[in-house]
Image (cartoon, rainbow, N blue to C red):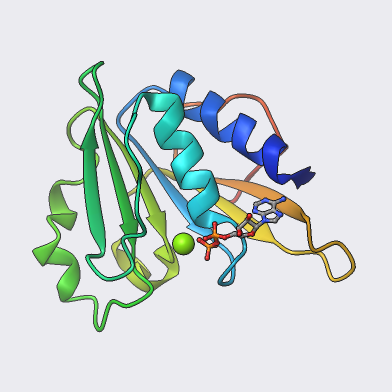
Length: 154
Ligand SMILES: Nc1ncnc2c1ncn2[C@@H]1O[C@H](COP(=O)(O)OP(=O)(O)O)[C@@H](O)[C@H]1O
Ligand SMILES: [Mg+2]
């Protein structure tokens, strides 16, 4: 599925407003692919009504919504080693009513939970304002809104 920015944001808002927490969503794609755009849209949909600055230096920001769900926005781009995951409270993530969004989840290596989504964003060579969106399910995470297509890899 190839989406414009506002379409990607609309889908993200639908994810945030409909997905059943806890859920973990890995956001993959190169710098500038749109991972943070999508993370913010999911946060907005879930009810985060303040700015969501980039967690690239802090690695993790947590937002509590009026509905009592926590949106946990993580960016592992600058993580030095997987040891640092435990300082973030990684072991407890996704236990409570949380929507956990992980940019650069690849850097968590084997420490991802059993059940999560992977949303991979790619910039097409000839279309800088569009993003190819690929969704993969690992294990049995709660359903996402039925868009775009979904491929099981586990
Ligand atoms: N179709 C699109 N979807 C998402 N972002 C887009 C799209 N087209 C252009 N952009 C731009 O690409 C950039 C994505 O930045 P960002 O979300 O911070 O990337 P990342 O977090 O993956 O490094 C933003 O400046 C956004 O405006
Ligand atoms: Mg980002």
